[in-house]
Image (cartoon, rainbow, N blue to C red):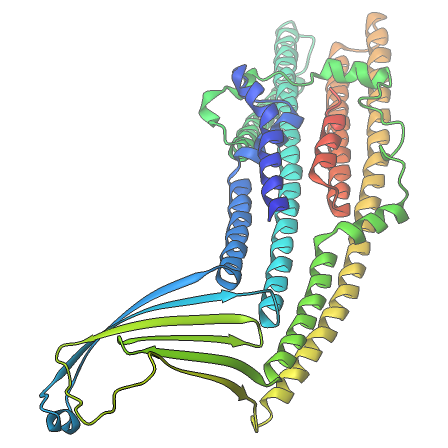
Length: 491
């Protein structure tokens, strides 16, 4: 319980450091790494995950209090009785008011109490792992949403430039047509190119708005408080410079920014993934269930002691073989005293008795045997679940590893295409300067370069997200995952 409480406190304090400074500066859209931390604090998904963990913690505390804590109960019983025996004593009706104080306390965690506590401990550890896994998923989702917003904004700004470029080309084509130097078909073609650019720009704006709404929802921000077009992101010119310079922020030196091999990542995943740990817990729970069946079949032994005082007070105490003790003390008052003239005067001040009660089953129609068989089958099923979880995890990590490697290769190819598109543009500009190429061809090559750069940026983002998905598949701890987002920020 202390570890879970400490985890929640550390998570809130560490994750709140970044977002507080961001919001204090009035920045509505933070960086990618800051966006991840904001999502872990402000998103409704994170709040639901924390509430679920807190509920599991409260349930564990409740169970421990119920099993190991003191329990006091007060009982008031008001009874009106009438019988022939009372009439023979001259009493028509007798009203008896009884007050009882009952106490229960487990002296130690033994038997079924110990099994219940072990089961609660396992369930709490499972809830803690599920909480961490949900936070990892939120972090990856927030990073992906931020990169999608950046890509949509870059695409929109490229299309803005494309609209300006096609408008200039349309104006030139109309001027040349008026001068008799250009056929009407070429003017119509320029007009169609401009309309296509406008249509693509409108589509990009809609996608940009959707991306911003999604990110704002994850970060807990007001989407109306910021004009997303004012946000500063990587420009096409900056991306071209980074690609041409082979900047490490854009060109990774290796497919993976760590030294672990695939086998080492698989070993980490088998050790950390909640699926394997949950399957192993299921084996332990099944074994606890089998132990409970055996405990239920054992004879029940209970020590009892009772004492009655003439002052109409009675006390009882019991201790069972699970080391649970229960005691009661009762006092009663009658509305009319019953005359008892023939009873002898008691020589002792208290009547008492001590006893041992043993209860064992003689016949249960095979219920105990069926319960034992069921518990054994659940244990076997849980053991098979462990191997099944390991196989699924190995396939998942191998798939994520292959996707990350493919994303790296796609990034290198996309960046090379952007370099080639830049060389084509420079060559086209030189031909245009020599009069060997029309200006419209330069514009077309410029658009090709911009689209190539956008494709390269998209490939870079896909590569980053593939790395995060692989890290999540390996089930890194949250701090390591956040450190990876800091390193992938790039620019």
